[in-house]
Length: 487
Image (tube, rainbow, N blue to C red; front, side, top):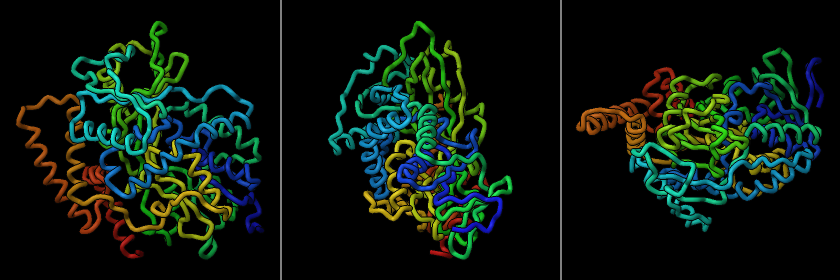
């Protein structure tokens, strides 16, 4: 391929995004001898990977709403298959880099059902996890949480039930990123420090990416794997407006803490079921006296690059109340912020993006790191024209808005989750008020969803954010209108 830009560099494949997904795809292509470059700022200011708990779990992420839809079931199946790839994936990384220190940092996962949540979320999701484990014949064991020596919550937040899932581990996300980068460079891949400003097209095909520095990178194939920041580049291609669900950010704050020297930390992940639009509260052992605490989730129109005081204090308060009361004597090693890529319909964007040579691998929400070995192999096969192994058609980027549940069901979910945040925040209100608040929330969200669009309803967390943020609501309306015009 000949470049028309004298200052540009030319590659067969350009992967935009240097998080776990982007590096995994770059590595997979480099192993096949492809001339590939991975583009991204070295400080990764808006990434999800750098702040991730990196739990390699599928069943611990199950919710009652996920398993109630075809799309959710498809995502669950991918997660189950991805789990089977991780042992070989990590072993190959060690072999290629010569670094054999263990990246795994947790021995299984303990699910805790405590008294903080609400039955419609916590109990329902705990039961859904159990049913799904049975369905897939995945080993698990009911345990007495009182026997977990490290756990010491507030007596009013003590766990009611516990379940040990031995096959759901975790890795250290920072060390995983470093090892992926080392393996990628050793395989012959190119790393480029920079940020994409616009997509360069020629007719109906991709030609490359122009950087904020003014340089242009030329590639026959371009993959947008920059998480929520991928929307910046999509917006520079007007022809794609409305054809692909827009991306927003699920902003999450996490904390790495150093526990007291005389305290032996847990060896397994400790977590509650997913709740209130987010991951459940979770703790991941990080070795050498450190634990990871995560994570909040707040839908925002744009990625965040600094953690908010609100989210950090909420997270730490939950950890002290629900996990261990003397965590307040621990030292804070760092407070992190990450941006989960969330499509406006809540499902991944994986595959061809509507222009010849343009691909997407994002929109994975909470599951990108866990799915990375599977998605990297599948995307490489598609880019190189090889036979594929998994059906990703339900997640193809060019699609009408996917609505997995009815409007009434989405509104009901939104109301339940909003009320749950009050209980987790320990609200103190008159006894009759929750029912009054519930009725008002239900009426308000029903009217707002009717006003937002006559046909489509976004997932509950996006619906609530749109009601609170007029500018975000405008984006959702514009997307639905543009989608209706092209589909």
